[in-house]
Image (tube, rainbow, N blue to C red; front, side, top):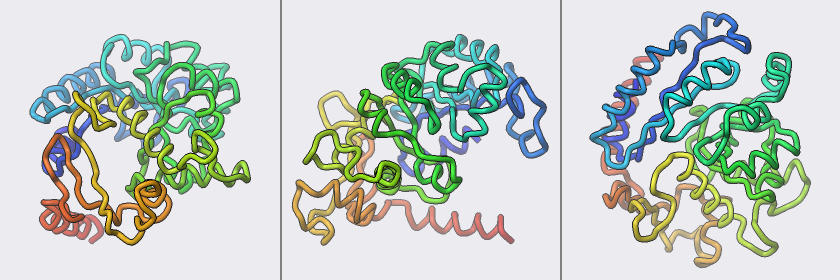
Length: 316
């Protein structure tokens, strides 16, 4: 699978941070897996070999990184988490935490603390870490995670689809927290959609408006987008996220003539996040190579045809 992911990144031009996942148990306390979980399982030796092989696989991809992803405190014991982190002292480190209320309750029963608090108190969470979801945190966990320098990896569309809950973005950002957005499912893939969902859930919970803008009168779209750029680049461990000397030349160009952008440059990111989504994207350049021109990926026809064929085979 790692090899196929790298091949897909090569063909599409997507920048890759590959995070082999360690999933050893079916629940807290080293519980046995159920039938559906067995296909995910690994052991320490095989996982070490997987990480080593992944590093070999990505060597031919410009700017690619390899990190690790011990799945969660329910899938990896504290002892094994410590062993894996010690064995891989460099690169991004992602872990799921506090996605659902039951996970928090089970973690308290097994380890005596909620998952985010346990991680903060026991494993030296710092800028290298990305805590995926981190949805159900106490105010103290929210402040402490923000102060740690770690990134909260948010999946607002997935969290809404699964009914998991709402991340406390307002308090987290108020305390200087860093965030990125991504997906934990395939219901929809879209940066603007994730950012829009993030902001709107904050508004619904707090019954107010423009929650994640930094100051009154600031562009909410700009605040969301630049915040996610910085946090996302950190979580990926890659030299991206801004257009400036020394950074990799990754950027998106919007079509200034698109009707949704008629309000002028000062409203473009608000229009992108809250109205237009991907529609006005004209050009995408990755590592200095233009991969999307006039809104069309250079390999779109071939990739689409193969996708349709694969889906038809799987659903036949």
